[in-house]
Amino acid sequence: MPGVRAGWRRTGRVFAVAGPASCLVGLVGGAFRWFLERAERLRGSLLEEVGGAGVWGALVPIVLTAVGAAVACAIARRVPHAAGSGIQHVEAVWRRESDGRPLRLLPAKFLGGLFAIGSGLVLGREGPIVHMGAAIGSLAGQRTRLDPEDARLLHTALGGAGLAAAFTAPLGGLLFVCEEVTRTMRPRLVLLTLLSAVVAVICSRPLIGGGPVFPMPGLAGPPVWTLPVFLLFGVAAGALGAAYSALIVRMLEAADRLTAVPPPVRAAVIGAGIGALMAVDPLLAGGGDELSERLLVGGGLSVAALAAYLAVRFVAGPLSYAAATPGGLFAPLLALGALGGALAHALASPLLPAHPAGPAAFAVVGMAALFTGVVRAPLTGIVLVVEMTGAAELLLPLLTACFAAAATADCLRSEPLYDTLRRRMLQRP
Image (cartoon, rainbow, N blue to C red):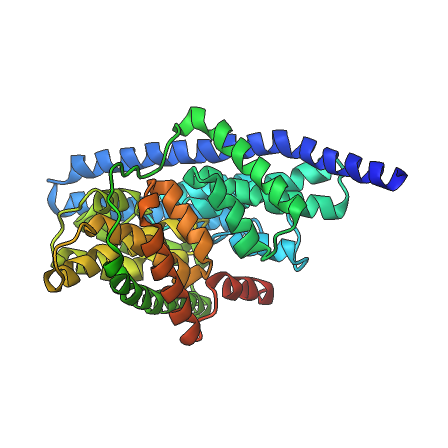
């Protein structure tokens, strides 16, 4: 009995620490999203102001993104593991392959992410928020002197809470921890992550509001006979995901070889290239939320426009990640998947009988399928997309396409991206 009581006290202590720490994750994640939204609005207003100024006006986004990338890279270089997504570091801590430095990591990830993503690089908010959430968990475990195993659980669970706050998706945060980070379903971990995700989402609402990120009311589910179409689309998404993962790694390797160029200068050059794209069309740059939202409400883009956006952002995302600034991969990946889905519908619809699965349905399925092809976490991708869009009617097409995407990427021997990134991180001095 004394052992049972000690176990209950230990469990109760972890959950007592997780409550306020998760609230802090929600506030930090909500504040990060709030600042990014203001930065995007300011960037959009600035582009409108200089839109008719000719060549000099085009220089403004180029300089803006170059400076933002350089500053973000300089910030990240001062703190180990601050560059990039950070999810690979969260996974490495869980596997006891690395340790955390929460006090230095938090401000570096917050400020560096604001400069990088806010200036227009094709990066996502979720990586920094997941990493900051895990850092808050690590810091809370240290300050309350939790058992090392409990501190590791808290670090991982609050990383999932960070993903939940990033996308207003508590179940997605839970599955992310179980399917991607730990690949296990321990009862204590599940309960701790679920509590942390719910608290984080609730505490982030005063800053960013509630409800799905991309609400899609009244979306009709496609008929069963269209499932083979989604199966074929999943195969294409899996192949595209394998190619996207390979391109990210190749870009990072190419950046590593440029040893004669200081990393902030390299980041500035990359930022200038992304800024030039932004001068042509703002939808070619940035995390991609605006583009995803447009595609999910019908879009109205031609086949040529969809193909152009897909081709440019397919390269711009890995190029931005190679700038070694804080920033994630999920949001640009979801936008790329939505583009692929809308393009697949535009190409296939003339060959098919009339059916209610319009471009929005294909865009939703494309988001989850491409995510699965790259990350190899189909349940996380499906639940995350459903929570972001509210499109539960598409569950069967989502399951079909994500199965095909995962199987295709495996057949192509494409390693899950975060396994590759974690190994690269551990091999670097």
